[in-house]
Length: 157
View 1 (tube, rainbow, N blue to C red):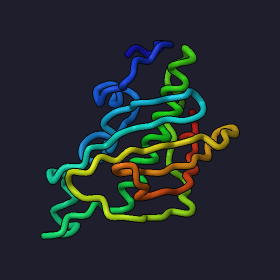
View 2: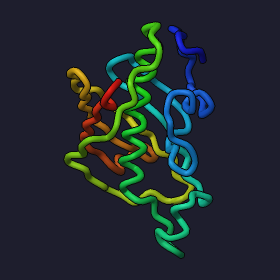
View 3: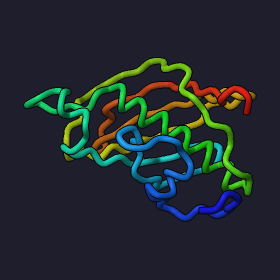
View 4: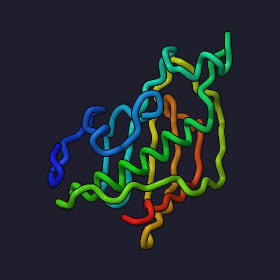
């Protein structure tokens, strides 16, 4: 994937994701992009394994993925939506966005090793340097988490 690549082949791999997001181990929480409608929506995947570093302490003998990391995975998916949308329009990557606000976070079921997270993120609005997104995460077709995310472009960009 080059800086001005207007065509994005799906799936977008983790190597390509690393060109679009600054996150690295252990905080890169998206493995693949499987669907995108530019400036509208994205679907991403995260495979959860027992090798995740957070399982050492959350919780010993009963591993559960922390909800805050599920929210972070949804936020990274929102970032991929903005970055890939710009690339698909032939532009270079957009400004780095930071998570500014989380509203209406709900956790409906625990996420455990062996689960595959499917993050579905939809852009509600983009005004100047702020984006508002609706996000939900599913495991085996059942919603395990959802929230609204507000992201702000890094100042000075």
